[in-house]
Length: 166
Image 1 (tube, rainbow, N blue to C red):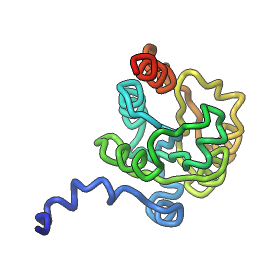
Image 2 (tube, rainbow, N blue to C red):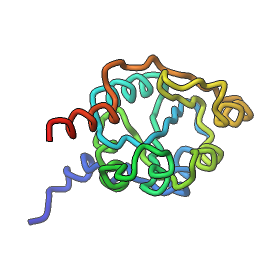
Image 3 (cartoon, rainbow, N blue to C red):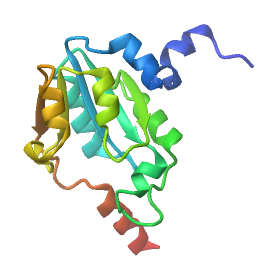
């Protein structure tokens, strides 16, 4: 059975773009907010953070660490729990997210340089002055901002609790 044409506008896959596609559509456009992360097990803290980030501009681009990139972050040998395609698809399904791109590097510097957002956002557990992304974004007149951390929500803690019950 073929889904109705109206389905296409709700299909999260339409928001999954390559770096080139994202650059062609939004590269350097004013009002673009950019964030990145692993988003291994999507939880309320993630959604609240992404909604707050989106409220700061006209559109929100989320760069998701590839599986290999996420493994290099040292969160554990079995992380990420969810594959990169699944993590990206779930994020794309959120109304507040306008576009999702994957990146394989340790940091999002390369994709940031291509997309040149007006605002780079991270959670409050990051010191923006210590991130290499901040001077890069500032080099084209952009800003970096840490949003307040949503306490009580952590993928690492959630995984720990689930494993303790097993």
